[in-house]
Structure formats: C-alpha cells, structure tokens
Image 1 (tube, rainbow, N blue to C red):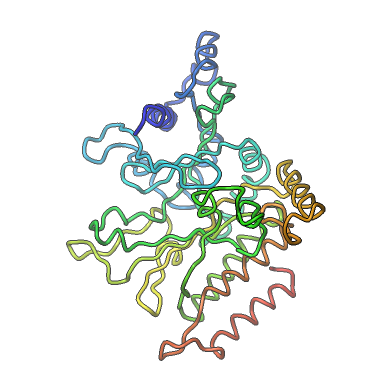
Image 2 (spheres, rainbow, N blue to C red):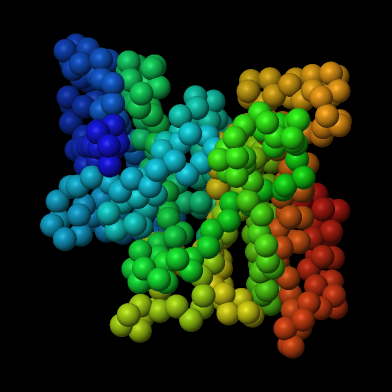
Length: 381
C-alpha cells in the first residue's frame, strides 16, 4: 500500500473509532485551520450516524461490536490499515476492504454522486430497506464525509466521501489460492446502449484498458428453478422501482459465482456475508453446480444531473455531425423508466430455467416471462 492509501486508510479508521465529544462536534479555530490544509489524511465524520446504526442493528441484524471489530486486525485486536483493493471502477473510485474482508469501502469522488445519495436517495433507500428484508440493493452500512472544506478534497488528492458496504465476495479469501481463482465476478448492465469510448470511430477515444471496464458480458446462463428466478425478478422489480422514482440510471447487477463443490480445507461451507439472511445474497445453487450471489450496485447517477444533461448534448452533437452511425442514448443519459425496463429484461435473459434433463425449457420459462410482462402492464416494472 502506498503512502497516500495508508493516509486515507488512517482517516477512515479514525472516523469509525472516534468517540463523539464536544470537541468533535465543535472543533476550535486551530483544528479547523489544520483540517483545511490536510492533503491526504482528511478529517472524516460519520454522516447521520444514528440512522446507519439503526439500519445495521435493527434492519440487517448486524451485531454492532462485531461490525466495529471488522475494522481491527483479527490477529492482534488492534486498529490496522485497511486492505487496498485498488481501482476497480471506471469512475476512478478507490477501494479498500476491512481486514476480515466482510466489508468493502468505496470512495465517491464525484460531487454529484455524493449529493444525489445524501439528499435524494438516502431516505427512500432506508424506508425501502426497512420494508423489504430480502432487498438486493447493496447494504450501505456507513457514509463517511468531510464536515468542512479541505484543500485535499478541493485538489482531488483524497476523497471527501466514502461508503462502507457489505462485501458479497466474503468467503473467497478463506478458500485456498487455487479455489480463489475459480471465483468469477460480473458487473452487468444492458450492453445495447451507446458508449462513446467503445462505439465512436472504432473506439479510438479510449485505450483498451478503459474500454474493458465499461461493461461486462456474462458468457453463460444462470440455471435455476422457476421459483428462484421469479424470486429474483420480483425482488429486483421492487428494488429498481425506488431507483426509477428517484430518477436513477446506470446501476448494475453485480453477479458472483463459484463452484458448488468448493469447501474449506476443514470441510466447512463457504461463509456468507454478514447480517440478515437472504437467498440471492448468501448464494443460490444452480442446476449446473454453481453457487450464485447477486446485489444491485452503483445507483448514484441521477438522470437530471448536470453531467447527464451535458452528455445527452454530446450524443446529439455526435448524431448531428454524423460521427459514425446514429447513436441511441447512453446508459447514463437514458430515462430512468427505460433503463429499468432494459435492466430487468437483461436479467430475465441471462437467468434460465432448465427442465429435469438440464435442457432449457420454454414451457418452464413461460410463466416467468408472463409474470414479468404482467408487472410491466400494471406499472410495477
């Protein structure tokens, strides 16, 4: 881990373990001056701390002491650096995991994402989580932020906001090195949208390393029972409805799979993510011997954000200037209801119901398709 990452890690850990005092609520002038000139090690606080604690303890049944201990070294019981995962996303976010890998920390470097989640989506998100125990929206357990302006945040040297969320890859690190290589992850979005980096002039607007991170494609089918598919589609329909109502687009299905035959060296099962049990979150065994986990990620882009409007104008300019063929909307500029329908149809297409002999069966898949069309007809989708 580099020096910058260690300092960011230290800032996060201080916010997690800091005890509320009068001084932390009302820092003096000198403390505010020193905080302003911080470059990498910013002073972070927990945003709406009691609200997130209630989510953790009551809604998701995460033990508070166990949650806090996740940020300590399991061998020494002391605070230690978080584990740097690197840059996993196209947005430039930085990622860490807790030492026990139960929780993933992601920075939110873009101001419009931070404000959208805090001011528009957070309250509907909390209400939805309280009413939907099996929701597949990723569980965000903390939001850390800088309560005052800092030079480091202005210059972009260090992120001013971080979210702590469940890690549905939990259990992978407890497997042997050979077994860890068998875990597969897919960050899935509808792939028929326009991506300038990929689609304009042969994709010369961006290098291959960037284009490879734009979209994933799942090269297989998720083969499960009718009930399991209906459960997945119905739950994602409910989850994406609140995103549509908030005008959110560009979210993705994070799909994880590993061989069902995989066990610990001592013969135990692969451990599941912390908190309240949920079948698709903990793992559904397919009919071709895979175990699948799934959650909804990256629901921080608002259709009516200034950036989305700017990019919509960019697409219109491409079409007006005839740069390549006519281009449809980008995933970040389409309407929230259209994105939701394409997203759900994408999920429906990759989840397959085989017959008892292991072959795809139209007769078995038909009730699922009809139920989805019914949801669309009545406005649920």
